[in-house]
Image (cartoon, rainbow over all chains, first blue to last red):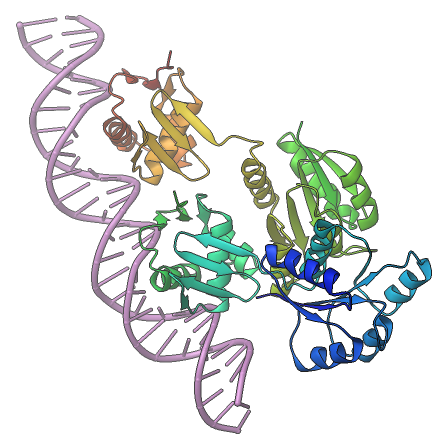
Length: 219
Length: 219
DNA sequence: CTTATTTTTTACAATATTCTTACAATACAT
DNA sequence: ATGTATTGTAAGAATATTGTAAAAAATAAG
């Protein structure tokens, strides 16, 4: 679950933001002042912080300075049309800067960009009852977690992204293993068997004799 | 005309790629740095971009981020054997990933797959109620899947691509089997019979006595 | 440094494909 | 028509490919 810390003293704005991020499945937590925000950031894990510049105690910039050791993407929110603020914010290492009043969609887009840059955006892939989350590297079947090794995971993701395409072992070696084919090897086969077994794909991850494999597209 | 943007700072590699894609009739444009690439992608229409990860100014991933709004298939090129790079690239939405040094044929194959996925190329061949998809390596008759062995598949595709042409056994041996005719053999015949039987082509895959076979064109 | 995990190799069993063989059916020439 | 050459067909042998388990090697974790 993507957790977003909303540091904003105007309760209406804060609630609006929380509702907006909830729409796309993010969990928003509201915090009304700077000092508390610093504490929360130190104690808990967050994916992004939306930081109002004007806060009742310490301002957003000060919060940023105090948490600068953390590797947390920050987007500043401000009512000021002040260019100086913007320069300040970016110099402090803010990921982005957005001026109120803003459109909810605009904010969501910015959040997505920041998350993607931080590689925290979970991209989900589905294949029937199997779900894959490339961010957390987890695979579930019927909601039950299936444990795949890294190679198996990469291999399966590759098949998902190339569903219904016949792929040769050479292609797999180069795409998943990252090197060119040298001599013959059963490595690919073994991993395919493993993925088949772990995910029960005996009927859908088919062998194309003398060619390679194909993951049949789900209807 | 299929336009391919080649973003690669090594001039030799870039020119090699350009020559390779020219062979199959694609137009390649070379661009040596990331910022210019972003501009080119914003201003002009491209079918695929080949994006080197290591560029003199901003890296390939950054280019990808900046053009992420565009719906342009991207294939990353990299010398790195780094899995992280790969995961990064794919997470950013790259269509594919290819490690240097690569074979020209391999690259062309990937480009074809990407173009096909973007529906800019067709991999389907039809013959009456029979449909062949060379990408997924499947054959259906009246929507029902027909299982052909590799040789049978290649043989049938060859006939489809040479419909209404009388082909000798020698020609078939050399085109489908890939070697020159040595002594007499019934191999070709047997496979033709097999294709006839499996696809019910008794009337259309005709024998030309003393010469070879011909797949009659569908009206 | 040891232990655990993952990846690769190895060896062999199970399958699938290709090719050969043998004979039947058909076409063709005289 | 009759014999010869060619092609159709089935069955099985030979070959090659893939499945699978388990050990060895490499890598990561403690």
